Length: 431
Image (tube, rainbow, N blue to C red; front, side):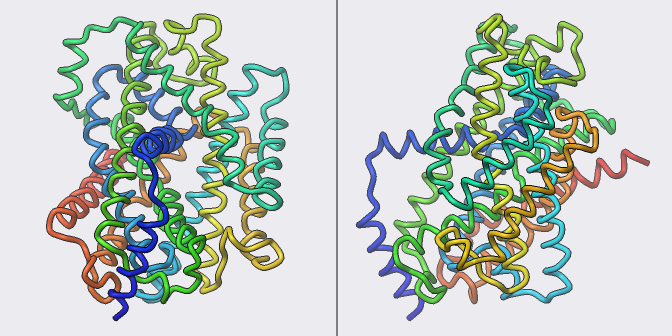
C-alpha cells in the first residue's frame, strides 16, 4: 500500500512539474557548473599545474562515480522520503550513526571554510581589501540570505556567474596543446605511487564526491516533495518509475557538464602553468593565469567571477548540509521551508557553522592550499558514507520495489571500493 501510494504521488508530481527540454538542459548545465565549487577549482587547477597532462585520466574515471553517488543520494531522499542522516538514524545503531555524523559535519565545516577563503582570495584580485575582511562579509551575506531571504533567490542571482567557468574550455583550446598527447594521457592512466600523487587523487575524489553532495541532494529531494504538499515521511514514501527516470536524466546532465569543466580546468593549467614551471599554485593570481591565453589581462576577472559565482552557491549548501547532518542525527527536524522561529536549532546551526567556517580562515592557512586540503579531508569520508547509501538503497524494507538493480549495485560498490582503495593507498604511502 505504501509503495502504491508513493507511485500515485509520483505520477501526480510528474503531471504537475513537467518542464521543456531546453529548460531542463539549461538547468542541468548550471547545476553541473555549480557543482565545481571553489574547492574543486583549486584542486583541479593544482593537479594540472603539478602533474601536467598525466592527470587528465582522472576526469573520465570520475564521471561514472559522480553520477552514481549523486543519483544514489537523490534516490534515497525521493523514495524513502527522508534525508541521508535521518535515514541512517532509522536504520542503524547510534554507535555507527554518531561517528558518521561527526565526520560528515566536520567535513562540511572545513569545506565551507576553504570555499570562503577561496572566494575571498578571488575577490582580493579585484578589490584591495584584506582576504579575512572579505571572508567575513561573504559569510555574513550568505547567512543573512538563509535567515531572512531565500536560497532560491541567492541561486537565481549568482547561478549565471558559474558559466564563467566555461572560460577554462576556451583557454585550454587557445593554449594549443598537442592534442595527440592530450588524448593519450586521457585514455591511458598514469599512476604514480608517491604520496603527492595519491594525495591529489584522493583530493579530486573528495572534492568531486564530497559528503555535502550526499546530504544536500537527498534533502533537496525531500524539500521538493514538501513544496508539493507532502509534509510527512509517510506521504513522501515511494516513487514512480517515471519520476526516478527523470531524476536520473537530471543528474546525468548535471554531472556530464560538471565533468567537462573538471577536465578543462586540469587541461588548461597543464597546458599553461605546468610547462612554465609553475608546479605549485599558492595564490588566486596563479590559478587565474591559466585563463591568460583566452582573456589576457582580464584573466583575473574571469577567474574571480567564476569562483565568486560558485562560491556564493556552494557555501550555503555546505553550511545547510552541516545543519541537516546534525539535526537529523540528533533525531530533530529542520527544513528550509520552515521559518527561523519554527526551526531554531536548524537555523541556529547554520549560523554557528558559518561563523566557525569564517573563523577558520584566521588561522593563517594559505587559501589555495586549504582548498586542496579540504578535498583530501572529504575524500576520507566518501567510502563509509557511500557504503551506507548502498546498503540503504539496496534494502527492500526501506526502498520497496525501488531498491537498487544489479547494474547500479555493481557500479555503486565498485565506486565504494575504488574510493576506499585510493584513501588506503594514500595512508600506506605516508609510511
